[in-house]
Length: 533
Image (cartoon, rainbow, N blue to C red; front, side, top):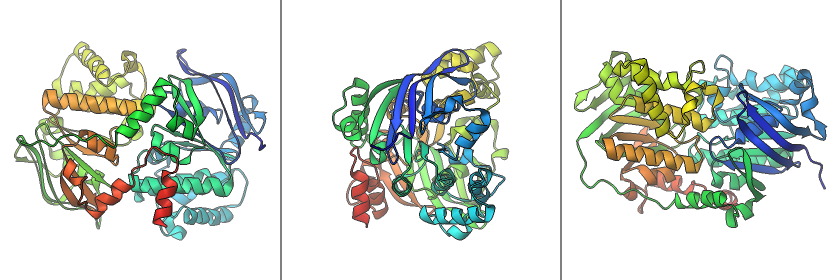
């Protein structure tokens, strides 16, 4: 039998306040094996992944157990030896590529940093190796790709660049922490296929962390289900998908399978138009990101905007809120044209039109507590007393299913899903008429995401809030959107009631999106790739 490259025994991780984050978890990995870690936000998945590198987030500490890499207990190593271990023996692919790259350095310098720092090769050889990795990962123009800065490439390309950085030292183990969370379904297929290719070529062992059971099923040999920092169930991928034993595991499987079948009914009678966009054009320099887009959102309605990475979805959202100036066209709210620039809009304009960002890591101030983050719009828009602000913060935390004591925490002490819920609470704090949701549930596990979607729907029914919902998850579109618009290369190519957009005859682009949604079975990706070949 192959040797064990990673063995974690009886791991225990606690916060500095004594809260147990991971409780008595053990696992083993052999070369070329992929172990999937599944569970809700805050289940301890990322904490275990970081602990495999003998690392704990700020405010947390490893208080028990052993972490063995090729038979050596890494917890007994000094800091210098741990630095040698990280990157060289075990590498990490973070959930948010945008937050993990240094915006002041080009991609080539950052990919070459580890092999040079670890003394594996001189810089010239590292650059040649990086180009080879870029080519293997099917990045555009591999010879010149590294000269770009992180903000100059798409999310899918940046995530692949992070994979190149992780394997630049040819590590024995790679921890993939939600590597496809922020990617559209077509790009996700490419990244999953490349991850499988890298693991096969380099015989690398991997921990694959995700909240999406269908995604994990495409790459994992075995799956561990976690909840509240404890192991709930583990088994082969086939056993977890087809014969889950635990009630929570069964709920995860059932919920994921049901997401492809649900569909919200379209509104037969639309209410008053809240937001109207007419022939809008948005540009970054000489590049046109939004091309003559027209759409409208009515009171109490949800319009979903779907499309591939780089299709212009987020650029359209930025144009609407005034972060991307319009080159042409109009944006009107309740019949009144909004200024192209955010700085020229009134306080009431800002309050009524709120935004939930795609990447909570870069949307929250790491120096402010959760209470300060959520309370700021309450104070800014309504000028309430400190006591009233604190009361409202407590109400909002309850609405998004976060404990009240989280008001005292810094965002750095939260999981990715918890950070996103703070972003949702911050948007709700302004009591808006329309919320632009840019992938608001992308960092949440499917059961928690379902709770957030139900919350958004409840608020819509109760308050008449309208949503412009940007997402790559077509299952979510079916659950929440009355109408759907599909974007491709900056243009809307299909629009109408959600059921109609997703029913034959399909627009070829919509058909491609639907065909790219992972199914809850282990052989789905292999079948898709074989069909495309």
